[in-house]
Amino acid sequence: MTAKTSKFTKASTGDTTCSFTGVELVKAGTWQASTGTVEVTRADIAACIAAAHELPDPVIKLGHNDPRFTGNPALGRVTNLRSTNRGTTLIGDFEGMPQWLANAAPTHFSQRSIEATSNLVTNGKVYPFALTGVALLGASWPAVTDLESLQDLLERTAA
Image (cartoon, rainbow, N blue to C red; front, side, top):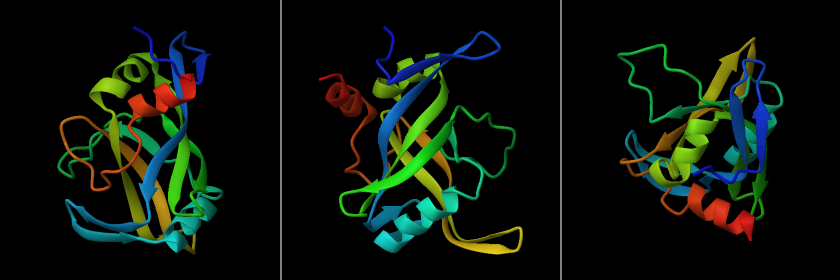
């Protein structure tokens, strides 16, 4: 079965990539993450959107990185960061996702978790809050448990 995504693209390598438009990434609130209690504010979401115009696109990956290993592939990028719900929800578009992953994601990796850095310093500039990646989660629960699943997103946009 092929995932119904908003767009399929043929890469120069002949591989088909897919996109998901309007994916919820994080909501303002206080969340219990694996790293401890995390508070995300409307200001954090606005700062994340502002930083996205100057930083590389965050990558999509399977699960969170284990610091003991390197070389994990980027399985797409998060583009077009924006907010909804009066600035309390960060959303973005998943672009360049391999078709095999786009087909599997709605049922096997339907939840996700952001990777972000506070006070990121690069090229002499400080970014108060920057999105660096999005981990697709299967067996693990995300800290933000009330995000729309990828399956629900596909069902809503297909209607």
